[in-house]
Amino acid sequence: MQIAVVVNGEEHVRDVEPRLLLVHFLREDLGLTGTHWGCDTSNCGVCVVHLDGVPVKSCTVLAVMADGREVRTVEGLARGADLDPVQRGFIACHGLQCGFCTPGMLMTARWLLDHDPDPSTEDIRAALSGQLCRCTGYENIVRSVRWAAENGSEAAS
Amino acid sequence: MQVPASFQYRKATSVAHALSLLAEYGPEARVVAGGHSLLPMMKLRLAHPEALVDINDLAELAEIRVEGGALVIGALVRHAELLSSAVAGRHFPILHDAERVIADPIVRNRGTVGGSLCQADPSEDLSAVFAALRAELVVRGLDGERVVAARDFFVGPYETVLADGELLVAIRVPIRPSVSAYVKVDRRAGDWAVGAAAAVLELAGGVVAEVGIGLTALGARKFVAAEAEDHLRAGPPSGERFAEAARIAAAHCAPTADQRGPVDYKRHLAGELVARALRGAVGRAA
Ligand SMILES: Cc1cc2nc3c(=O)[nH]c(=O)nc-3n(C[C@H](O)[C@H](O)[C@H](O)COP(=O)(O)OP(=O)(O)OC[C@H]3O[C@@H](n4cnc5c(N)ncnc54)[C@H](O)[C@@H]3O)c2cc1C
Ligand code: FES
Ligand code: FES
Image 1: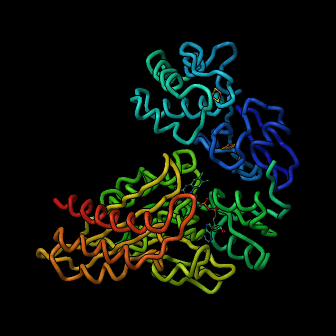
Image 2: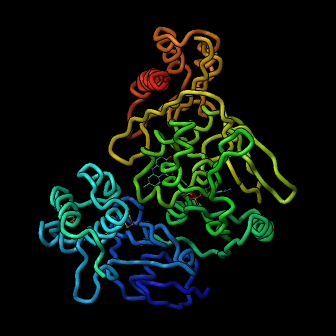
Image 3: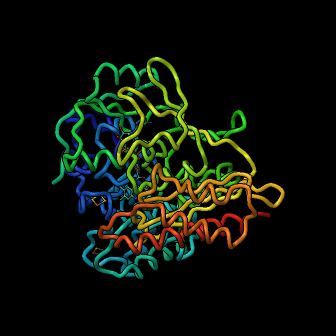
């Protein structure tokens, strides 16, 4: 079936099978491999993207469900050479090691700061509680989000 | 890679359209709401519908409002929306207690209240909550609407009274002065319950006029501890009576052993959680 999805501001029209998952549509059909794909069971959160502005686990959404809607992926965070403050925070505070969980963490962090520019560490932990990181022990991820809050919670524009 | 088997997909544009699509595709068609229970089951090939009718565009099912003396929650309301609804929390704090511990914030952005109830998973938190609240479920089919008491909605694990082609459209909770609480024990943040208890008390003149006690994942018939309710009704809301109600609830539920714990532990938990939920509820009385 034909779908039209606006991804990071650009419309893509594609013919897809209804059973295609959004994460595979983004990675395979559009080549946007920044969105990762891990547990496949909506537990790990590496596949988080914004669907009409709301973070969702794209391994558990059908691509056809995104028809006529807007998707934002990690590739849509930076504006040209300007990294988003959450991306800069992860660099400044070593918020990643292997980087596998990072795209999902960044997308949820961006959404959190859009709704609460000054979250407590508790708020950050709660917001990220549906996402797993096997490397960092989370401490530096929480610090990275706080860094972004303190150093420009405005999205790059 | 987990991928569902092939199916046909149709987007409903209204409730009437959804009902006619369900009729058109017959008993092998399924409604998809948040998809956070159905799609995982399809990926594991535990469910293989021939057609999915997507109700995500039905704004008429996505509202929370007060109408006719009841809090009306549309079936398509997302868990996150119920959690952030001030009117829901004001009348029934138990709804916020439960939503705070259902899955994780990202799953809550997508999963729906109606999907939760229709899934009828024995571990689904809202089943016990709406059973304790004596909510009414509004069901629509091609022949019209019917109202089913939450306690009569669940037939067994993963089974409800919904007939093929019927849609749950809303959950109605009659607004009466009450205090309520939901308490859950899980193994880690965002996990399914090891066990949980819901308590709703209507207090009048120092007496428990009506009471609802729900149990999640503890093998209670229809998610309710009816014998414990009977014990509390018409008496004072005292610690002693709560302890006895907790004992009765534990004795009457039928938990099963699994990776979350053995039967003895879960039975102990049932009593402890009922006591905590009852105390938590009366603790909220002004
Ligand atoms: C990682 C994870 C953790 C979770 N943890 C918890 C938890 O701790 N506690 C908890 O309670 N839940 C938990 N859930 C389940 C979550 O609450 C789901 O969102 C919910 O069970 C189903 O809602 P849904 O909208 O996704 O339903 P769907 O998956 O779309 O549908 C579920 C079933 O209901 C039917 N259906 C849906 N809507 C309607 C309707 N309006 N009328 C008729 N039939 C309908 C569908 O056909 C399907 O059979 C978890 C889910 C995940 C993925
Ligand atoms: S791949 Fe989607 S949550 Fe793990
Ligand atoms: S940085 Fe490796 S999983 Fe998070």
